[in-house]
Length: 408
Image (cartoon, rainbow, N blue to C red; front, top):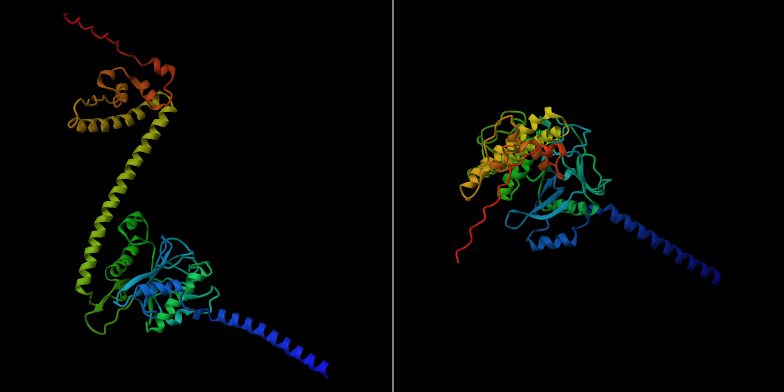
């Protein structure tokens, strides 16, 4: 009997030990299954406290493809949204520009409203929320696509992919905002930060007019720090618009009803748009001037290279190219000569003559017989050929006069 009792005790102890291990596995699985309920990280929580933000206040998200940035903005107690956290996007698909059709692997651009029903706590990419593509604007333009997400796992096929750690905080912030009563949160997806510099940089892109429209909504938020109200009519976005006749809806493909934007806001937006457009035009003018100078330089280099590699029949193109440089330098010398004494203006160039080739490189008294050979010597790092050197003549050098002896 004592032996039997001992066996029972050992069996009971073993069963309890196994149950303990099983309970531990179940606890781990339970925690993983409830990843959607994990609180925000301690770092984000501390930052919210410093910025005087409630854990359940509304949020808004901005995405910038070119900068690989996802920003989470959160409402402070003063009613304005402040930038809480900026995350580096792990991967996004496609190129700059909107999504057009299913399977093009293009990440969307535009304004999207995320509801609780678009949150996916069971995502195979850790955690996710659906952007709700296509929205009313996309539908009005016949765009197709599905399952366009912000998710974890750092893998994208038309989505904005984050790391698991990043999406954990993003998901938790969105979840808590819903708990606080936010019915939807806005995601603004842009190709880049909508500055005059970036607009000028991409001025030749086929999507420029689409981006100009997005920039209006971007400016509304930049000026107010409050997410704009989004409407769609006549197949375009309108922002912070209220129909003049109450109850008249905005319909995506129909004519826009008469509407108004708060007067002060409209004034500020118009001023910002005007200022940004002026800066845009100035930047474009500088870029185009620089490109034109580069084009001319490359053209002249090509002409000179052709001359150096060819025969006598190539002399005319290089002479023309150098004559153009001569004219430009002569003009510059004339202008600078008015401010500096002793400057020598370039001599007139006879079109088609060999003397014109070297006019930009020598003083007038040295140019009469300078010829093409002098140009070759100046363009080649080690001088020209013997034949070219032999063709160059020099005026005899007069000996300097010896001064008379000073009277004693």
